[in-house]
Each structure stands twice: as structure tokens, then as C-alpha cells.
Length: 180
Image (tube, rainbow, N blue to C red; front, top):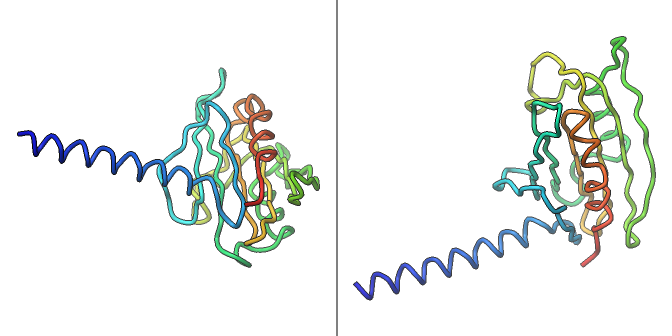
């Protein structure tokens, strides 16, 4: 009985160390480190994602939001303009025309990043192969963060109220990127 308890305790310690290591790895890629905002829940690992955070719906919204940090490898994932075009192309205005995006250039801790803010009817739910009808009232805050090991793509998408309620936290996420 004592041997079984000792084995279980050892397994718990090993599991805790593995989870801690996974959490550290989930917050670094391409020679960059970042810190998830308080209140955002880290989701399990998924292919092509350095991290995925779930954000609860704000009052008045019925769906939660997701912030994904992608890293495809050095030189992978396309250029800045191609990603801006793809992300904004997933949104249409109420008139059915392409939605207008606000694009900006920023630097945090010496790390260049390009940001995108676009809203409207969103056709990107379910990924690139989705064929669902566009969902109105969505917003995307995106960033291409240029790390020493390649670009990281940050895509925060969800209902407009939830995105607006979490914009300050998103800004903290971007400001937390450091080299190392």
C-alpha cells in the first residue's frame, strides 16, 4: 500500500512538472516570450498554435471569444500584408462590401508589430475550410509580431462586445512580448 501511494505521489509530482513545463512552452515561440492576461483561460495544445486562450462572453454576447497565438516556423505563415488581407477579407460591412480595417505599426520592447482591427459579419468561424454563413457583430484584433525566430500571428476574434470589453487585456498581451 505504501509503495502504491509513493508511486502515485511521484506521478503527481512528475505530472505537475510536465504541466509547468508545458505552460512555459506555451508562452514562448520564435525567440519571444509573452504573458497571458489575467482572466484568460489557456486551452489545451492544438496543432500550429503556440497558445490558445478562451475568453468568457461579455454581458450581452452569447458566444465566448478566442485569442490564438500562431507560430508556423521561421519564414512560414505569409507576410504582413498577406495576413492583413486574409484577416480583413473574412469581414464584410452591413452593406455587404469588404469591411474597413484599422492597421497600425507599433514597437514593444524593441519588437516590431503590425496590428489590425476590423469588425463586421465574420466568415472565418471554423477555420479556413469553413463554409458557414457569415456571423454579424464580430470583431478581430490581430497582430503580426516579428520575432528573431520568425513571425508570430496573434488573432483575437469574437463577438464585438466581448472583444471591446477585453481590448485593454489584449493590449497588455501585446505589450508583454519580450525577446529571450
